[in-house]
Length: 195
Length: 192
Image 1 (cartoon, each protein chain N blue to C red):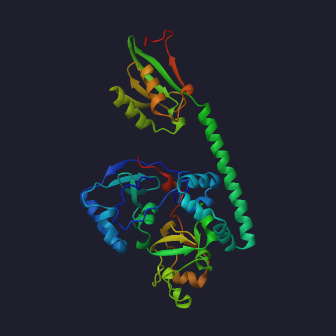
Image 2 (image 1 turned 90 degrees about the vertical axis):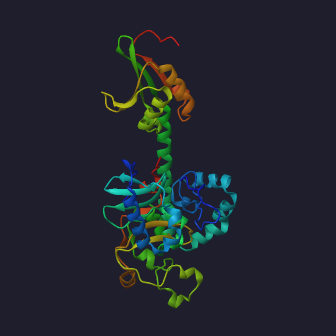
Image 3 (image 1 turned 180 degrees about the vertical axis):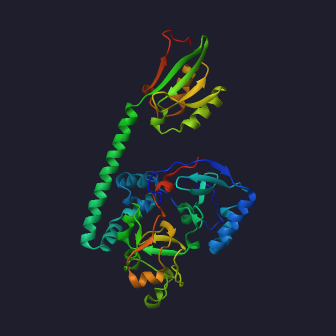
């Protein structure tokens, strides 16, 4: 979505009632963030709405980008936020070979997740439940859910996006687009300065 | 990213170090195209992390996970990307060296003048913000205006060419002093 470098558009203050609505929406979509919500979005702080090209709006606190949204799609976290609270989002992992494609803005394809280096939920039945495997969860994820993609051998996440295909389907088909038009490391949104 | 400071010690928020060159977390620098510079930066600023990421073992471990064929392709791709990044950087450098900031005094009405500053956008400055700064500094009206030849310039009310010259050379260190030029629309130089 942000393959090209973008410059922030008009910045406006968010009404406090809207701010409250956003807050509840975030806690609904990302229940794991509830313990940290006061830290991410303090009640008294003034949230800013920054308009970006292609009908994307970005919510920011001062110069810290927090969440972005394309039209009325779900609120997606900015990667800096993901890096701060890596365990609060549904995680998947891609193998090493896929990283360079993701970082150059390609759609994420299923083989990157189903290969030995990738991780999907519910794989621990056969691998045995190690603490390292546990973080990828036990629940199958459905189409339309927000996922954070991290990479094999890396600590930090490299992509945030909406699933185009449920994880169950992925395991069966092992083909096709999984995440399209997400926010990846080094894209326009990442590089954009907010001051 | 300016979020290093706000993490209180009790918070569970993870502090991530970002590379000063390519802005990615250092572990992703190898995909950025400016790997060499990133590595140097990391060695200087976070030696411990550099040790961990660029040790022989780490590199070997990285390579072993890919098939030979994929490795070759990845290497070729990386090379291409690096070359592209390098040439882009060189071009940018050249553009900056050759572009000039021109401060021009324009007569508005006999003894009244405005000062027009053009060429600032070549140095990655946001004209709107600079205009605001000028206005604040000199306590005059200052705005971004369109130039007939295309492009934009900052128009500051009043004859301020010398003051702006000093201000620009002092405050924006990315602009070399030789690249700033004062031009008068009239032949006589203003008394300073």
